[in-house]
Every structure is written in structure tokens, then in C-alpha cells.
Image (cartoon, rainbow, N blue to C red; front, side):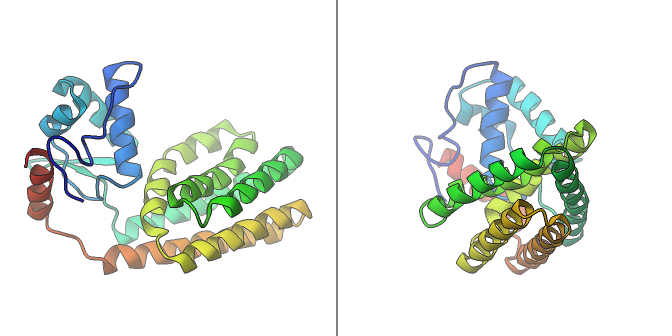
Length: 245
């Protein structure tokens, strides 16, 4: 997607209440997770500062926080880039996600089964209404569905661990839930998980959840490598053209 100084993907950054660092963090985070910035794309402090209408200092601080979250990588003698996971990294991420979500589901059904099931049903109903209308809304609901297991599990350490990967999971979900067939299958699995938990069939629900994540893992890993990766210099040329053309 091309842009110019007067409008474009980074020009959409607008002022928000709070500190400048927080403004920069929120806007760059949104651009990474929801797609205007590509995986592996170089990040220029100067370019981002101009797009945000602020100095480099808050942008630099925001990039540091995004690096802590795993969304940005700083390569010595090269530059700063949006994270771009390898096949192995995606597989490891999904392994960790499976461990956390499956245990969180079990704990939630031990400690707060009724609130969990009620919330899952509410999310599924909202998914049904939005799945043919607004893709980004559907993806956000997908994230919210899985987050419910963490919310209701009653274990702060598990929640903290999930927080270390949740933004990367969401960024990958946004990019790789493109096909209608994939989204439909994911929706059906969400419906099944909610129904199984409503019937108290926890073991089967965990199995479906693990199958769901395994299928996502296979799809994301294969898609990441099949779509190809532009060379860094091509990304850099495109970035500067988009910001300063």
C-alpha cells in the first residue's frame, strides 16, 4: 500500500491523550499488529517521528518497549525491524501457546466455569454477526475468545506468561486468517469448544483447542514460507518511498 507525505499508512497516526511515548507506542503497536507495517519491515526513527509529529526521543522509547514485547528486533550494524518469525519460531510459539491455553482452560473450568461459558457464548454470538461483515472485528473476537481462558484461570503467573506472546500471536492471526475456508473452520471450532464446555466435557474441549492451535501452527508456518520475503533493501526502498515520495 503506497502513501505520500499528506496521507498513507503511517500518516494515519494521530494525537492521543497521555505521554508522547505512550502515543508512539500505541500507534506503532497498532500498525505492527494490524498490518500497515509488514513483518520484517525496517523502522526508521526519523520516519516514524515525522509521521507521528513528534521528536525521536519518544519514538525511540516506544521502540524499546516494543522490542521487550517481541514485536521489534534490533539487529546490530543493520537496523530496527518489525519482528519476522521463522518457521521454527512459529512452531515454538504455538507449542508454548498450546501449553498455556490448554491449562488455562482446565483451571477456568475448575474455578469459574459459569462465567467462562457465558463469556464464550457471548463471543461466539458476536463472531456469528461479524464473520461476514468485518474481518478485523472478527480477528479481534478470535483473540478475545482465547483470552477468556487466561482471564478466568485465576493464575497471575500463567497470565503473565501468556502476555509475553499474546501480541505476536495476534499479529500472526491478523495476517494469516485470510482465506474464507480457514476462518470458517476456526469459527466452527470456537462454536464446538463453547458447546463442549457448556456440557462440562472439558477433556474433549481441550483436545479440540489443541487441534485448533495445531492447525493454525501448520497453516502459519507453511504460509510464512510460501509467500516469500522481499529483500531488506526492497523493504527499505518501499518504506522511504511511502513516507517521503
